[in-house]
Image (cartoon, rainbow, N blue to C red; front, top):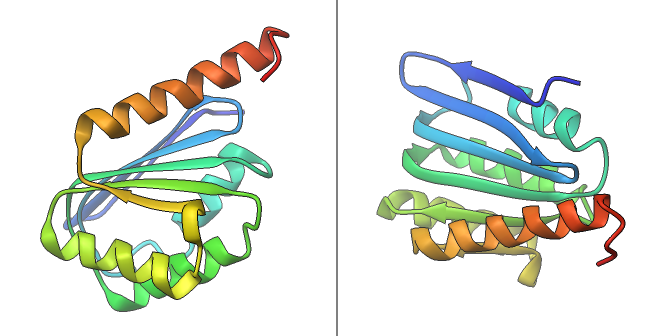
Length: 139
């Protein structure tokens, strides 16, 4: 299975990576107005193949339309066992991310963070846990 994918348009880019089994990372930059349809969600499903953790690095993102935010919220609601952490820096992206979280009533299953170091540390810890699990180290 290919562990990477890239979607680009004149105004948006999304790079998908699977840093470890059960973990998908999206690097999102630009403005998402729905130009990719459901392809971003399909890429995440392909990378995870089931339950997992989704990390969204949106520090380069400037915005997402309300329709796109609603699509992500609806899709994430169907992923009952998933946990999502989203790094945002642009004010409009924070509003979009918080809309997704509130609309989906995810509680602690969807976290919005603004601190890059905290995001990187959480991603690194998740990857390390999966590596230990794969190596037979448990937890």
